[in-house]
Each structure stands twice: as C-alpha cells, then as structure tokens.
Length: 400
Image (cartoon, rainbow, N blue to C red; front, side, top):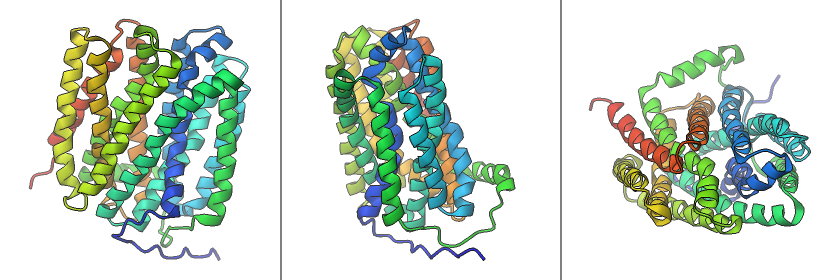
C-alpha cells in the first residue's frame, strides 16, 4: 500500500526560511537558462556560421518547451506528490543541458533547448504548487514577491556571468554550468524539501484534459491568470528583442548590455519587495487594481517614444518603468489565480504557467519576425502587452 502523504499545514505567516529559498532556486532555472546566454548570441551565431535571427529561434523554442512541459507536470504533481515529478524534471534538464553544450549545429541547439525547457519547467510548476500547499492567499502573495526577488537576482548576475564565461571559456561552458547546478539542486532537494502534498486526491492521469479544462472554466482563475500572462509577455518581448535593439541598433558592447539588463532587474526586485511590504496593509487585489493602470500608462508612453524614434533614453526609461511595475502586477495576479484552487493546485499552476509561456513563445516569435521590419519591434510589442493586460482584467471582471 502506498504511504500516505503527511499533512501540509496552511499558514498565514510567510516565513522566508530555507524551504522558500529552495523554491526560489527552482523557479530560477528558467530565467537562468534564458538570461545567461543572451550576451553569447553573437558568439553562437559566429560559431554556427548563421545570424542572430536563427539564434533567437533557440529562445523561442525554449518558451514553447516551457508551455508544453508545464502541462505534463501539472496533473502528475497532484497525483504523485511534488518531489518525484521534480526529480524527473531535473534529470531531463541536466541531460539536455549537456546536450546543448555539445550541439553540432544550430538546428540541434534549437531542438535541445526545447527539451531543456521541458525539464526546467518542473521547478516552476512544483514551486508554485508548494506555495499553495503551505500558505494562505495573502501570505502566498508575499512569498511570490520573495520568489521574484531571488528570480530578479538572476537577470542581474546571469548576463554578466554569461558574458565573462563566454569571453574566457566559450559559450558552451554556460550549459555545462547549469547542468552542474541541476545536479546540486537535486541532491539538496532530496535532503531538505519535504513532501508538501497534504493527502492523496482521486486524481486520474487519463482525466488530465478534463482537469485542465475545469481549471480553465473557472472565471476567477482565467481572469487573473490571463492578466498576469499577458502582462509578463512584455518581459519576454524585452528578453527576445533587447540584444538586437541595444547591441546592434544602439551600439552597446555586450558587457554594457549585461549591466543594462541588470539595471532593469533591479527595478523588478525593488517593486516586488515594495509589493511585499504593501501586502501587510492592503489586499493583493487592491494593489493589482492600482498597478495595472500604471502598467498601461507606461505602455502608451513606450509606443509614443517608438513612434517618434526617441532613441536610447526614450526607450530605456519607459522600459524600466514597465519591467519594474511587473514586480507588483505578477505576484498578485498569480496569488489571485491560485487562491480558489485546492486539490487542483498543481494542475492550476501548470495551466497558468503554460498560458504564460504560450503567449511568451508567440510574442518571442513575433518580435523576432517584426525585427526584420522595424528597429523598435520590442517597444511596440511591450506597449500592446500592457494595454491588453488591463483590458483582460477589466473585461473578465465578474459582477459584484
């Protein structure tokens, strides 16, 4: 007979202990895998005798891998607990990271990046589900703010680290480093992270599709999840388009671009921590009601700056405001999406993550293609994302 899971107490006290740090590390695998190799785009293109457009496709493939992979883990985490699916995901991540390091051509790199993302997204799904297991909605919003703090460190350090590693050791070493990080994480999780699935629910893997459909039909879930996904798609437009805009169009050196990338990450860190402080006094919904219109305003400003070809500072300032405001929008949208989910917490986490990265993949592909026609493709897409996020939130509001 299978051993029953130990109960997981739900707390309103968001204690930032070692378990929360581990959850932050799990959610950081995806941004590390994205941000660390951005300064290496030119080196990769040169090594494979191709252009940066084809290297951007490896990033697009990663986004689509995150979309599909999260759907694979959602129901599995509700059925088998949190840790076993996590081990499988980390194993996939380690093997494919090593494969990326030795990819013989750009086509192999694109394919392996897709598979690497399927491994990386296990940490995203399971970390969110564990937060839902352990904390009340108000406390979970504070925990998500802390996760963004740790995730925000990755965009600050990862591009700088990636630039130095690429210069000294070559870009392939980047993938060997993250493979080693995956091994170290699996060992740490085995000894430190408890199984937080409170009890077994009657979850049947063959009913995965119907479970996901039931989650999607929840109006509250769909409203918050779609709002957060659309808002964050602007971040992925920035990740995809910023190397070309700032390095090729504005002429920054890769090292200077890495510092600029870190500057924007400081913004999202600061606002996420401001969000954590505000949650002591205001509900997450109230904060979202204020931060979303701010996101819309800076989106409009960015579109205006792009229309008038405002140059480096005209784009950088509203971009910084947009990325920073996401530190308040995304944690509260995520907490709202998962608040009413109980036995479907893992499935709901997978669906919201898949929506996020499906939109991110489409946006990434759109920025890559639009870049052939305009130098300001990134700015236009971010502007539209901010406006659509506010529209989705308002239109899908349930009658009081």
